[in-house]
Image: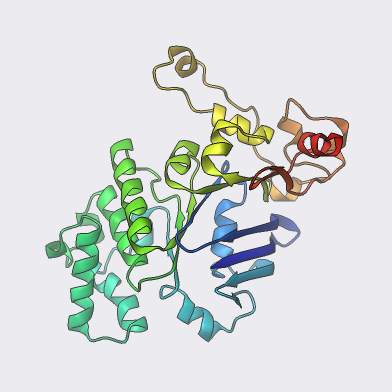
Length: 318
């Protein structure tokens, strides 16, 4: 369904996304993980050309065989919502506070499905019921709903025109753990029932491991590891993936709760990226080659790849 090739995004001289590539099949869920500033949201929003005009985007984004980066605006407008939609992070800021929920959900239905107002409202009621929000409240305003309900409304809006692909940009941000679990279960059920493809962005590897088939870990604007989600969590090959997986305390283990494994420092700013591996300054295993040699994704097992000199040298030695 989706094939991304050598995707690059820059703001002036600052490269935010550097040569990202992956594929996504119908009914598959791809998780994208990494710290803030690693390029996750920029990469995801560039797929539908939702970035500001100051961004320069190159590469290929083949969606159902059509390159969206070169598509005309009229065609791109037809693809958005009807074929591919977005669940934005921060539902309160994404929803219009002065328009009712019904008005906001009816808008894409009226635009793309070409139905009357009565049919559109009926569809809105069905959507709200499907995500666990009472249809009777459709004429309410965003501030009248809880955070979890607003996030469910955002998911309903993304599903309004029955798309084939949903991009969920940290849909559980600022929600408590119980509501997070409900939203995750909701998305899992929708994927299973509708056969849609999902790109899920999150900082939480445990959430992605539970929900996603495959996982892409980003750092410094690149994908540094890609493969089956459960395998990446249980047996990470890249040092950064290992650090992310170790940052979460283990339930029932007091020692890990009191002293969770952390990672000193911060990801580099796009304007500060130099030669070699972007993770080298924070990597305890960094060698001289890491500071000079740029390693692309390299096979690190069945259906797995990692961008690490140690993985590359291991394959060469084999």
